[in-house]
Image 1 (tube, rainbow, N blue to C red):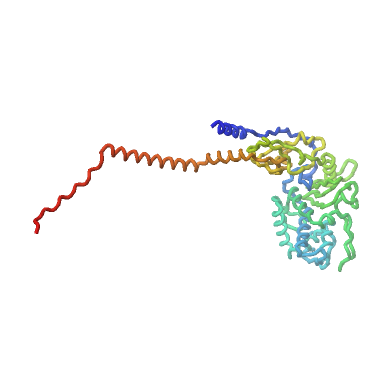
Image 2: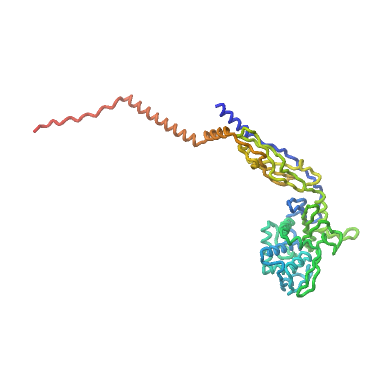
Length: 457
């Protein structure tokens, strides 16, 4: 009885034990940095950490940033085998004449023949509107069918605020997207090995065609080349796409790498302004440069969780070796973090255990819970917590546990209750019968029928 009472008290105490994690106050040390544009996004494409965001879900006109989606669908058609980069397409009258004369063009003519690869350079460097239509017809058979594919692909990528009505971004009130959706489209396009070499090219020579001598294409991305204007070239810039219309303003999706770190930016709805000294400043480029200088200068990649670090202990039952087992993270977490903030003090760790106690045997590496890292309300990672060592079980304690579990099974007590009830009923009935016999005595024997006394013959 004393042993049973001891174990009950022991188990109750174990259930009350919890690992406590101090709540660290989040620090907001990003400052008042802002971008002069309708919407802007700066993100680490490797970890998808957002460093800066302004109106990233606001629907805006994308202008020629639309061509990123056009390029993506063409590259996917190449991957699927429907086309090759060497496939030659012929410019139809619809593809060439359906665009306004004042739109950006590579000067392609009806009936001119170019390879898919050369057309991709035309649309991504020179922003050739007619080139998008030629590629659309080559992929889907018609411009309208290709636009349908653009919208289907956008939805599949998770773009919730995007609507395309053409292949090139020419103005239309029903043609819109967001900075975030453009990031999703660009992220997918960057997975294709041919995408970045194309969009990162400053100058490209298109070979002579059946209707033209060779053409020299120069990128409209001033971060890569100073051919059109100087002052914007950025060390580490990798290109992607520009876009501008009177309705959309000046837009730019760009990427850059420095010291092994990459950043991707989206700027939409920027202005072109004239400074006091008469210099004309296109803010899609100047604000992107500011974003990169701020992102590379204000953040550093730091280890915010080591897989060798011991984080808390979990009570262990059914072992005579030890009462607790320590835990360590399953992986090391490295993230961008503000340079002037100490992650050890700023990161909030929340431990969630699979159970408040763990029964032996415990295997080394067994998952016991998770730790979630948050900063400024944003979750950086959730990592499994593993047992740091093995803990053997005590045969005696396991047997005692099994016996107690068996004795606490409702079915057992129901069965015992049934047997006890049946036995009790048997003795009750037996006692009643005995009582009746004592009261009324032994039952009289039945009367014998008198014999027949007739005349004998």
